[in-house]
Amino acid sequence: MNLGELLMGDQMMNSPYRFRVNVNESIYLCTTHPLTKHDVDFLKKMTREMYQVNILLDTLPVRRYLNQHGMSFRWNRFPVGYYFSSIGEDSFFYSFSIGEGSYYIVNHLKFRVLIHKHEPFEKGQATAFEIVGFEVSPCSIKHDLKRVEKALVYSNDIGPITCPVGVELEKAQIIEEGQKVSFSYEVEFVKSDLRWSSWWDPYLKMEGSEVHSYSIINSAITVLFLMGVISRIFIRNMRERAGYQTVNSDKEAQPAKLSDEILTSKIGYSNSFNGPRLEKLLCVMVGSGIQIMGTAIITVTFAALGFISPASRGSLLVGIITFYLFLGILGGFVGVYLWKVIKGTSEGWKSISWSIASGFPGIVIAIHSVLNYVLWHQNSTGAIPLFVHLEIFSLWLGILVPLTLLGGYLGAQAEDLKCPNVVQWIPKKAGASTLLVWFLALGVGTLPFGTIFIELFYILSSLFLGRYYYSYGFLLMVLLLLIIICVLASMIVTYMSLRAEDSGWWWKAFWASGSVGAYVFLYCASYLIYDLQGLSGPESVVIYLGYSVILATLTILAGGSVGFLGSFYWVKVLSTSKEIISFSKTFNELIPRCIRSSAA
Image 1 (tube, one colour):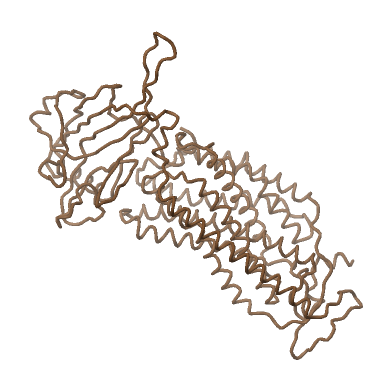
Image 2 (image 1 turned 90 degrees about the vertical axis):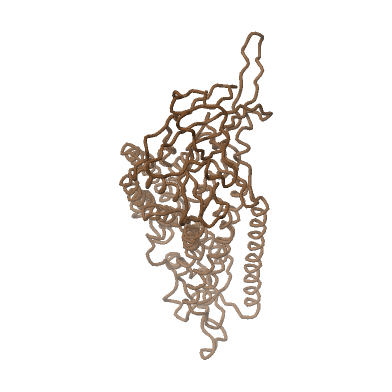
């Protein structure tokens, strides 16, 4: 087992089912002792909470096809038991409503193995068969105990078995105290034209392609709208420049024709490079976010190109961990370089690099440790053993920390950013309240969330409803649109902040796009309430919410970092282009550090 399988809790064990190639047969397995009250309560609990059974054959998960209420469903697992409501609805085969009724155990499985005949390359070689499909039809059947108790284990003399149809409850095996349960299965081999190279295609068949397409079109329209807003901002600024007299900001130049009663003084974009509050925290969050976003882009790109196959269990998670470790050099470089731009010196770069290497990983490890304790307390096979924790610690200390420090060193040695040192003056009315800008920054996160919530629904469904997510092509396009929308949204909020004569736009630019993480968490909570109704017990809810917090945190960091860097570059370009915004009268107090240093 690789690291990805261990972290996902995928521990495979041999099942009691035995197949003989091209031999169709019905097999008797065993008969239990009379069920005790504890057994009955346990089986009813597993049925009520919709526990599912996973079986693999030659790495292929079993497939179950279900037609209910005029709809067709595909599952990669089958339930432990069924519930029949006393209301009289046809909910025997699958029911999401639990109330007064009877419980029936799945004790017979009809396996259907699809094989492709492989012709021998040379004469004399035996004919080989390739397994290209694995399906199951589970049912509950009440065996004739007098007949099956005389049969031996793995005997095939129990005759043909017919599963109950509809609501033939008298033929199903009820879960009651004192009842004996006999287990059996049958296997049928069916020749198929499907080649081994395409054996995963039925599992990766994309559902709802129209929905994905509409989501991308909606995101593209949002991008066009935001680009229109940005264009309007540029046009407005150019009109303002044409409407007022501009004087160079040297020692002898003074603002011309200013009315102290109506107009306030204005400063160029260069004054927006005053450092923010909590600058160290900002640098750490931006560095960590760029590392996460880079990991997402590379992983999704590799998956879209087919380099990450679901046939290799755990390969996706292994790829994510590998890319994240090696992109520590990028996170360290960006965080330290931003620190250098704000402070004007590279002093303290080691502290920044160390915080980037231990900040977000520390949060993830802390939350995961708590959730792992909950799993261990519940005797779950998903609990991670101690040696896996030691392996993760070794990867962090041996790879991530050195690479992040290397990136920080490169950032400290990089060429200094040339700050703008030309300021122009124009009169302008006072800007809007900065409090309103904060409300705008937190509310504009709905724009990038609207880009990803469709894909987020499919991803959550694949994790909790037994489906494979393989729409990586759509996901890559959505990810690129998400980056563009985050940048444009942050640019608009930054402009509004600067119009409000607030040089502390840094955090607003970060949270304008980073606030999408808060909406992601709210969506995960609503998904828990409305789509995971069968998820019962406080332990299950705690585990789900814990992973939702991790997802929301990485979304905040990734979205906020790309939005901030886009706004930072935008402000720098405008300042060097001598674009104009408002500033307060106290120009000498607000003049940035980079201008003072250049004058010295």
